[in-house]
Amino acid sequence: MRISARCDYSLAALLELALHWPSEEPMQIQDIAKNQDIPLRYLVQILIRLKSKGWVESVRGQSGGYRLKKRPDQISLGEVLRDIEGPVLPVVESTSSSKRMNVFNGTWRNVEKAINDVVNSVTFDDLRNKIKNEKNVPMYVI
Image (cartoon, rainbow, N blue to C red; front, side):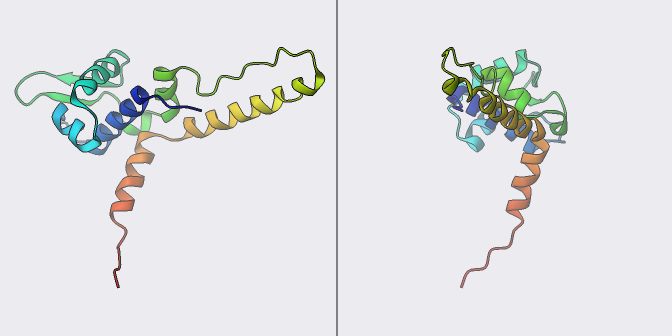
């Protein structure tokens, strides 16, 4: 499975907005770019696409910016991946007439199902909580 830069940056932008949630204050694009290390020029295009897909909404004005359109627990990683990239791991049936090659088809479908099950079960709230928990782990230096 390969994740494109566009998809990676899209996920990072959504994660940043999820970390900012439940604040009603929109995040300015410069802050999202800085916090997630996304090139500003590229982030503009990404946010336009995420807005057109219904994942984020924009707020106009001097204190405007972007915020999630849905709650983070209502957005799964799988939904966003498929929305941006298409099928997570499209399985192509073997066209070989050899029984030796066709025996793999069931395994590839199982792999596809397992990957989809994992990405569908992870929400942006899960990712947000994971990051917040990692920040609260005490670090001891000797």
